[in-house]
Structure formats: C-alpha cells, structure tokens
Image (cartoon, rainbow, N blue to C red; front, side):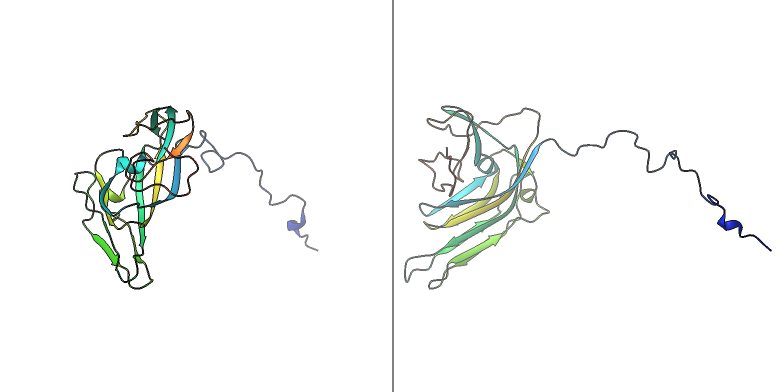
Length: 214
C-alpha cells in the first residue's frame, strides 16, 4: 500500500526568515513631509462701506497675527493660497445691489486669470458670487507676503465676504511684520485683522466672529 507522503508533519513548509532587499527591510526611518503648520481656513468679513479695494497677498497673511508686543505683530503664516472667495449683498428695497470680484493681478509671478465675476440682486434675493482663481495662474498658487494683488473687490456696504484659503508656516524662524501696528495688544496672543490689512478701528472689512482682533 502506498503512503501519502503529503501527510508527513512539517513537509512542504519553508523556513521563514528575514529577506534581503525585500519589503520587510527598513533601511532608515521614513521621511517626514513637513514640520510646518498648514491650515485650511474660511474667514468671514463684512464691508462697512461701499468700496473698490485691491486685496494683496500681504493683506491675506495679515489676517492672522501673533501679537509680539503692545504695538507690534507678525504674521502667524508665511504663505497663502486662495481657494475661493464668496460674496453676498442685499440692497435696500427697490435698489439693486451689485458685487464684483476679479482676479486681475498683473505682477509677474503673482498674476491672476483676468476674469471678472459679478452678480446683481433682484427683490429680496441677494447678489451672490463664488469664484476661485484659475489653478494654472500664480494667483491660484502659494504666495509669500507681498504687495501683489490677489483679487479686487467692488462691493456695496453690508456685503458679507468669505475667503477660503490654505495657510502655511515653515519652521525656519522667519517672521514678517504686519503692515500696520496694533494698539494696546496683548503680547503672545493670536489675533485676527480686517481683510484690507488695516487695524480693527480703521478697516473697512472687519473680521466676523473672532474673539481677539488687532
């Protein structure tokens, strides 16, 4: 009678051990993609008066500040990417309200797509625009603090403005001072500023919902 050799205990098993050059070998610790802080944020502002305003990348980075003294402040983040801008405006009864948003910067390295987005209210329905810069333009890419135009606003009083952006902070210890000094600031606090870079008492676009402002 033939014996079933496959029934022998341990037959066909292979000794398991470390493989050379295989996936089980770790040559070094994995790389770390970033130590810096990256934050996606949606900030809300409201126009106190009708105005046509160029919003710069410096203005955007000045919206979130670290107060370093009673009259000094630096940007918490050092690079910004505009993801979208959204506007709402409702006018007095019988008077249409128009909002205009344009990514019309022309600075080399920070140029926009030259598109204008506009809407006009009718009746009780507010004018509403939501737009983003073309991703193939520099206005839609990460930008450092500069006087280059990120976008233009032409809005009536009371317009609500939401700016969605990605903020990034590297770890090289570089600081950029805010373009306008705060007054009576609490050292060490993080504060928010108006969209036009001006202090809370002077801005035409005060931030909404922030506990600490500068």
